[in-house]
Length: 244
Ligand SMILES: *Cc1c(COP(=O)(O)O)cnc(C)c1O
Image 1 (cartoon, rainbow, N blue to C red):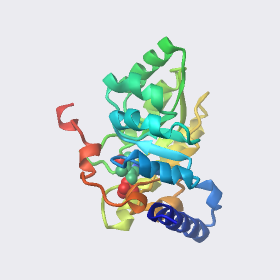
Image 2 (image 1 turned 60 degrees about the vertical axis):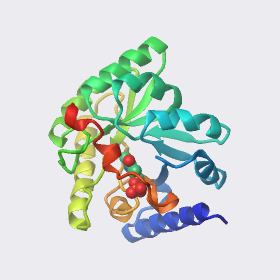
Image 3 (image 1 turned 120 degrees about the vertical axis):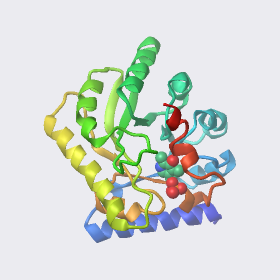
Image 4 (image 1 turned 90 degrees about the horizontal axis):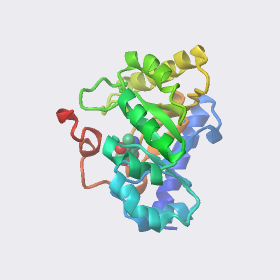
């Protein structure tokens, strides 16, 4: 068994233990491998071991690895900040975009998909930690944005995504996940046609147990499977944000 497959087993055990603790079935939680900066050969190892869901943050990486991985059955979600000039590329390679964080982006996606006669599954990214540096819709604007985005018929809203506060204080991280769960409830109560937010993508290597306890259906794990990355996460999370 390779290091990667061992790490995956360990993460799966953590998910199972967390599910057991809060009375959920392990089948309710999907594992998405966050593969930014990870070379294709290592991702292939994980896919060969039976994993079927990966997430990329950069369109360039998504495109570069696609050829190497396309023969393994899997889905690829885009989980990074999407710049509108990359829409064309991302639509070619991703099965779902988890990081729709503005009405403007949703509208541009709609326009492109319409021209191509395609549709796309999306999640709405919410900035539950209210950190200036993070992308995502402010919680108080999420409901009205979902109502607007629901009218864009090439986009299928499937869930919500958030990045929890980067903190060692579990209670603060938990507040972020609880907030996403409560926004999910508010959206479901509206009963908007074509909108289902049954997926909650939240929790990473450091906080996956908390996320499972608060209702995550997709956990996004990078470091715990592939090891530490050379770049700090801020490089991916607030890229160019100051300039927006
Ligand atoms: C990198 C990343 C992850 C995984 O983070 P780890 O701490 O390495 O598990 C999850 N979600 C997003 C959006 C990421 O960019």
